Image 1 (cartoon, rainbow, N blue to C red):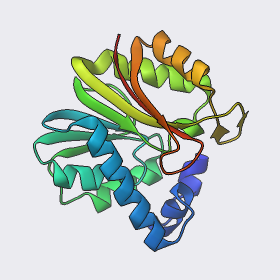
Image 2 (cartoon, one colour):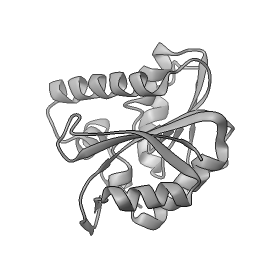
Image 3 (spheres, rainbow, N blue to C red):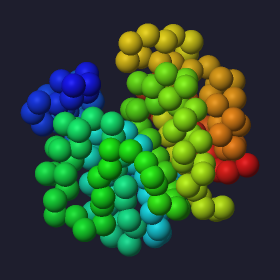
Length: 192
C-alpha cells in the first residue's frame, strides 16, 4: 500500500492529505484553483489530463463546467482513484486511470502533485505529457520553488525546472510565482 493509499481510507482523510485546511477553506481553495486553471488552459474541447488527480478535486468541477472536453484523471494511488470514481460517477466525460498510455492531449495540468515527485519522476511525466500533447497543446502546472528534497516534499529552483522542461521537449511561455502561496510557481508550457 502506498503512503497515499494509507492516507485515503476515507474521503475526509483523503481531503486532509491533499489539503490540511478546514472544509470551508478546502472548497474555497479548490474553486480558486479551478479558476486559475481555466484562465491558463483555454478549455474548448479535446482531451485534458489531470496529472495527480487524487480524489478528483479539480477534475470533477472542470469536467462539469466543460462537457465538450474529455478529461483523464491520472493518479498512482488506487485508494484516491476509488474516491474520484465515486465522486465523479455522474460524469460521462471523465476516465480515471492509474497510468499510461495517454490519448493525444489538447491540454494537461497538475496541481499539488509535482511537489511530491522526485526529479526523475517529474522528468518522466513531463516527457510522457510532451509526447501526448498535440502541436498546439499546453501544460499548466504548479510546483514549489526552493532547493529542498525529502520524503513527500520536493522543491525546485526555477533553473532546475526549466532544465526538466527542456529535457522533455517543453518550453515555458508563462510563469507566475506567489499565486495562492508565496512559494508556488505556476508554469504554462508548450512543446518546443
